[in-house]
Image (cartoon, one colour):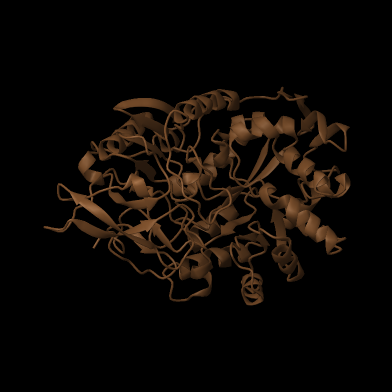
Length: 529
């Protein structure tokens, strides 16, 4: 239920080999990641593995966030016509992926309002499900408006009180693991006895984490540990999501006409899996996958998506100062900055350029467009993230949800080196220091995934982590409880532009030539003044 397979960072056939032994035989793919890279071929991408014989069922939900806001552009654009076409093309398409741009839903003056309501209308017309994204919506008026707009679910609940109110007002709840213990114990304390409106969402989980702790089986085990009975927890990953997504003719139960997916347990309380059958055939014994791995030769539209056709230079990251100034006022962001106002600070000027200030945890952050071929670059100062070690930078083409290349670094030269190496590899992670590439992770499919087994990707990730341990990283606390010291892997998510984000940095666009914009209001501001 609600999983971004792209966040496993392996392609669908290898995703099947990873999660089928862990009891996951079908997935509602929250499909606004690859669709922002190549919207035209998005549906084809998700159906290809199945058409080649993969036993895992993927039900794509085309993304509402394509683009995420009216101030982003690139690999895809979805509105009424596109969504209507997807729903008519395949019965596997179950609805509309999480509607994230809440300001555009409620505000008719928002430039994305018409596009979003076009997608919602097309979904209603085809009797599909409109999935929601209610981050930060906790007051009763907002909850009522969210439900009245037809947004049928929410997977962004953080507290039992919030989830309880949303359940009471008709919203289907999809609980993510990091908030599951508090929510389940709180709902049990409130006397919830009918759990039919609850499912467990995986959302974003890398292959390394799945190898370490599990897939949907981990969600069920955690629910049981949090106080839910095993039979109810299993319903939350089988019949409940199938009913919610209107997929009961095919999945969710063992009955005539369904896909004959069976998970055999040797310990119910621990959800210990002995075998998994999919499509009526055995696909795993213990943790070993024994099903087919179809051969897929991905065309250029999937394998050549990082379109940077020029050499990126250190000057692309320079921030010019006004003539004669010794200091400049600067706008700063920090990871997961969910405030109406941005941070300001006076920064030093040297050689006509505004400088970083590592003593105050200030570094430089940039977004490089990877769609136009021109490598249009926006840059500004960020607080509490990135390398303190001199002449060091790290970057990645996983930048939810637009997936341009983000780079954070202690020197412009190192940032340029990251950009050029990413252009050569076709996407993924690159860490450089002292003029050398220390580690890289290859995501050659869409700049998001690799066409390799999970174990091979995990080994490459471990080499990246080992190299990152030799770097000193800046750190400042922020709102998110999951922003940790050390290697800033969650910067992949700090580029989000959906609610409750306000001020963000996006690739340069007509509305925001410097890329610094409040996506809730459309207001822009200089990065230095």
